[in-house]
Amino acid sequence: MDFSNDALPPHYGLNFTPTFHSHIPANIDTTSTSLPRPFVVVVTGAGKGLGYHISLAFARAGCSGLAISSRTREDLILLEAEIGKISAQTGRSVDVLEVVCDVQSDAEVEGFEREVREKWGRVDVVIANAGVISSYISPSTLSSSPSSYSNSSGNGESEKVASNLPQGLVQDSDWARVMDINLNGVWRVSRAFLPLLAETKDGPQTIYGGAFGGERIDTRGV
Image (cartoon, rainbow, N blue to C red; front, side):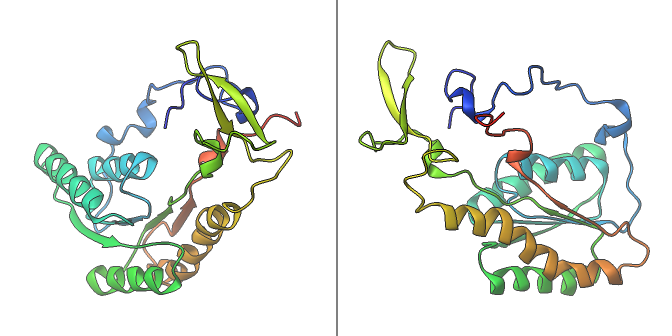
């Protein structure tokens, strides 16, 4: 999916923040951080995007255990290989647990927690990162929809894209899926891992719910 400024409409909020900084301040640079050991991190939605890079950051910081989950086994295999390269470079081994897990499933989330508990008996940080974007924000063939707009593709042609949220809501079939993953999924992960976090008395006991919407907001009502 193309997130360049020209690919999405103004109401999506891509330009809400005019300047993005990619420089990492020294105080949060994971290459200069050395985590205590043992230090176990759980990351959901680790196969791609933010979760992938969060996992690599904790590997660079020297966590002792890293539990990564995704709905796609192939993505986890590739991520584990990258973590192995980081371990070789830093000289700090990272024990990796990869689990295929859909955060829409209570049973799979609870099973993920059991595997972490059985392997390490502790968890210091849980990153409930798994999330999706509504399919209606992506290019669509629903050209007859009253909630669509024309978007220039850069070659002089226009394509129809369904906007879906929040004004003129017509197609809401994707709402339940998005909410079940982005909202209920964070709740399921939190509910499953909070007991183990509480039992890890010498750990930071931190849980974080990631959100793409934290920096991409709908500005049509602003």
